[in-house]
Length: 529
Image 1 (cartoon, rainbow, N blue to C red):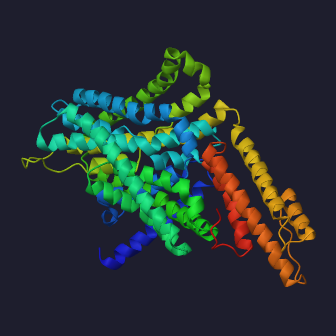
Image 2: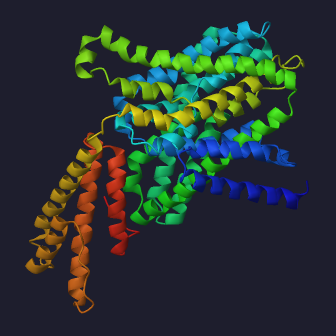
């Protein structure tokens, strides 16, 4: 295939990804599954091999911005509040699943080394952040369930990849040390977080000194890749580097850039993530098609049966682990039981059943080295890759297709917390604006009539259009008053977020409205607060 044909194929794939995404919005089938099925068809077409990406490139292109954005749009308050269940899933469940899959793999594949079995367990243990988000965003799930699943998806890849790298190193060298793996787990995690915080701090410092929306938006896009490269160069957790960086940037983004930058960055990131999420599932399906076409029929049947067993195992382990991890701490701790009563069964089941695997698992499997340090072929590499394909397909299709109908039958009660926080935040922002207006009432440049007009706008929640016949001086005064009260409202919202009274989600929603008001007033480039 020449260069022109390759470009045309890539354009065709991008168009197919967009069309399937648009179709998925109109059908009850999750968009991710439509795109995987479309990718399977593409993978069987002549010349589809040109679409194959190296596993390292898959990790580098897709994972950093998805993790960074996931952390940025996750409420840090809710993440901290649910740190115990998140840790039980993202660390405890990953370790348990890895161990049980390794034990079962040793029974299914006689002669497989422990290192290879542990590598397989680490590959299939973490649910995929992109796959889960693609399905869950269509469901009105209670905030706590979403917070736990989002928090898990931010951390579990790090846990799994640290275990994976230790197992691969043992597989290549022939030396497997569980103790060294445990130590490496904590060192890599801590150093990865530190790298992410340093990179995000530098992004914040540079953003403070610029006043260019394009440059500031580019900084936010560059941040995750810098964090990933920095962590990879130090051989520590690049996943946690992106997570830590995204969380840190979210805590400061409301004060370091101007409204125009926030509006533009949100639009660019929405488009960027839409493209990445659409392409990742299409390429995933194409990779499946290529692997299936290149495998012998007898190998597919034999290894496919083992893959079904392991897919059933990872689903079953989660279905057992989540209720146990929910009930056992409350049974052991009366204080926890009193402070945080047992959640309803429907919420527990939703968390138990949401465990689709995706591109991270497949990329990790394909990234297994072809040969060991001694030059021999890596044992059971092809079996690990095919088992991973089966696990990803089974979990993605089975759980992805059933989540929506299951959720509709569970009838989870509506969560009133977001609406209550939204109303509280609006009331506090209005109060802060009125206090700011009162403070300005003694200024010589403002009249009582102008104060009354802006006060009416604040109380009624909308801005009156200025008439073209107004005196220039009056128009300038009204604009000055509106900008001052706008800044007061923003400061009130940030304070509420910092105090934990509202979530980052509520702050983002109301801040977007304030940003549009600032743009209407011609103050999009002015930092507020």
